Length: 275
Image 1 (cartoon, rainbow, N blue to C red):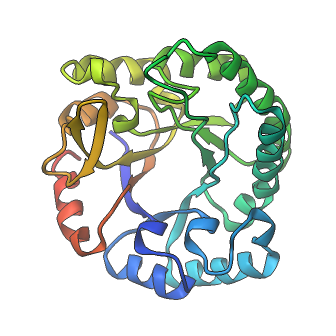
Image 2: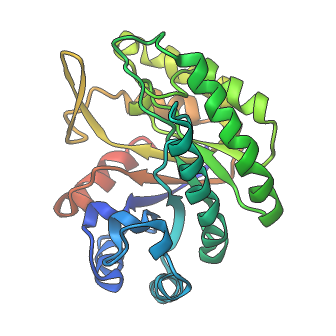
């Protein structure tokens, strides 16, 4: 099993002063963070606002605190069927690749695009083709700058299953393309009672490509899931880490999503029992 570096999604600690937020994260015992500029940094409302001055401020704070950026979260829709929106989102994503490099972040990451999971066949292939077109524009620049791009499978998004994820990996065929593995986001309702099989199949298919792991609590509702504490979650983390045990990575960020800062120590204690 790799060494897991415990971290947290930064904007779960709020949006505002970078030093205050990251100091709080460090004090709570987290070793790394997922940074999304628009969601965390005061005054940043667009990717154009991520100026060299903003990047320098963040980098100085991170270095002083000895807190790493594990994932630069860039929330865009790379599989959108709206061509103009998709092209704008691709341009935004590419603009953040040098930011990822400057921050010495492990990767720059995004989910893909929401699809109506009540009608899973609706334009799915078109969405996959749109995603591949986006990656054709993104990956040459990522490779040129030596930056890892990570995509996150979500069961109601474009890249929605183990098989589609593998299809994207094989089609893009770049050493700089990796995966963010969020077991809750892969857990479509039909897999709820077959989690051992789901996670084993996922890791067998693309475990070697995982750049970061997310964890959170999910409570089952009629049409999907709702956030809850880790202790109440339907996610079988025993099955998750059993499947992850043999991946070849020496170390990997393990990032708490939807964190409540007051429960940081409790969350850390909960997840450590599986490590």
